Length: 339
Image 1: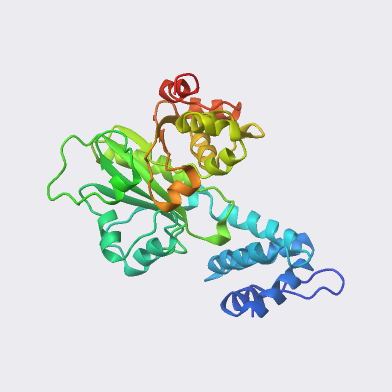
Image 2 (image 1 turned 135 degrees about the vertical axis):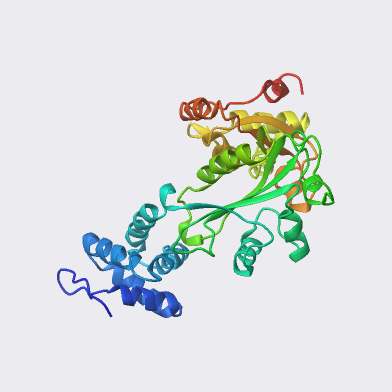
């Protein structure tokens, strides 16, 4: 069973083996473990979580346990303290220096490819042929961050299309026929889907680290000189519904106003804008028919955004974001006065 951690008073003891057993067991076992961990003193709880992380399979167990806690912390007393302890332990274990950057190609293991398929939540993968198209070596790339203890379970991955100029449409990317020869004129890498894979790591940031490593890798291995996204604007339709006056004019101008002026505190209201601008990108262009899927039309009226990652400006843009500024191109800011 391993050494048990004793808590003051009558609180039951917990060993790493108990956490491993609950992770492999059913919901009832996890609920009992939740209550036991909540009853421990903070120092004792931290000690057993650290000991568990150092055992074989322990890191996986902690990720699984935090996912369970996040799903149930509104239903059980004391789970907020357990969640904070788990988050602290996992944040230290999944620091950027602990994660490996891994290209994923069509020759990756079936387990890894299955994880990519299952975790893709932005643009669902429609079977193995669709997956292989997204991994085509001539004009597509896929990169992940993985922890050495969980080599077949990516923490986060990003899908990339190589082409000429900023991509204007999700459908143009997803429906493009695969090339048969090396494409000419490739100068832009478009990051069109980034996905966190582990519910138990929610709220621990990995995306910016992955994008920056992917940009460095692409700059060193391809002719690409521009790095951009093709991003959804998930909060736009909801915001527009709450601002009737914006519905009488240009939809594109309203979207620009949303991205440039709608705030949550000092930061952009839109979560995708918050992520990319916080990672050092610039809001470069809005695409009026960027995603004509049912989901795209419903959530952001079909408009997508290109965020540009200029390697020379990343630090300056991050500083501007910290000051509460939205860094945007003239083409976007002009929409406010000349839609």
